[in-house]
Image 1 (cartoon, helix red, strand yellow):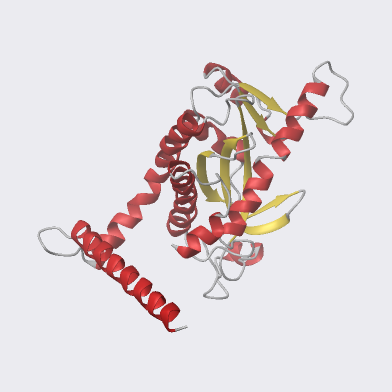
Image 2 (cartoon, one colour):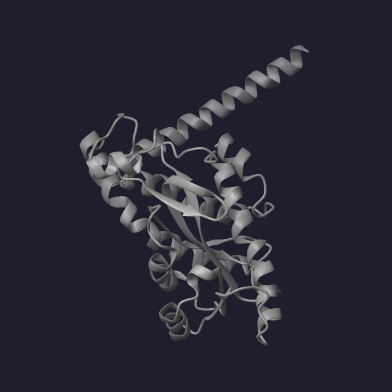
Length: 281
């Protein structure tokens, strides 16, 4: 028992010594001419950081595809969709919004309303996301907007961030627009989206679309649920305002990509046990 306690104490001291060394290194990196940035400097830089996050996510997504080779044994398909994130605090009802009346200080006035067949009405944000439609889900492109922004309006901004190898883009009916299909063709990508009109469809391509639709439903939708679960966003996002929410959500997505790269470089199971890993960090 005594030996075990001594070993535990020794391990703790070694850990604290390592942490102290890492802390000193971090302090040196954060200093400039021996001084730390002021709070105003942090606030100013964090305010402009969200605009660069979609580009950073795209760059790291393409790098992960090169390193992890998710398409080595599977088709080069990418799924695209949006997922709702509820705003922090109370909701701003339409009648009050039209009058410009904010009945409670907890209401996020930059959030907005939207409706979907699955989620119904919600007040908040949309995370627009494209990820690999493979067994390993790699986020490739992302943007965050108020909930009332249409998916098809945001989707063109995600296309330039996709890897050059992308061959198919899998989406639902919202993306089935001629202009967006033409944009995809110019990037040598075939858009596969569900069609408008009553079911069952009888055109020659219906069986192929059904196959792709099943592939999409097993990639983007489970990943959205996983992502929310990892960061505990099944309820509401923890911040208010478009700038802060973009910083928080897109920053979390970039962190997820960094974890995948960390697991790859250390030969850990890819995409596994990410939540306990982040909590331990």
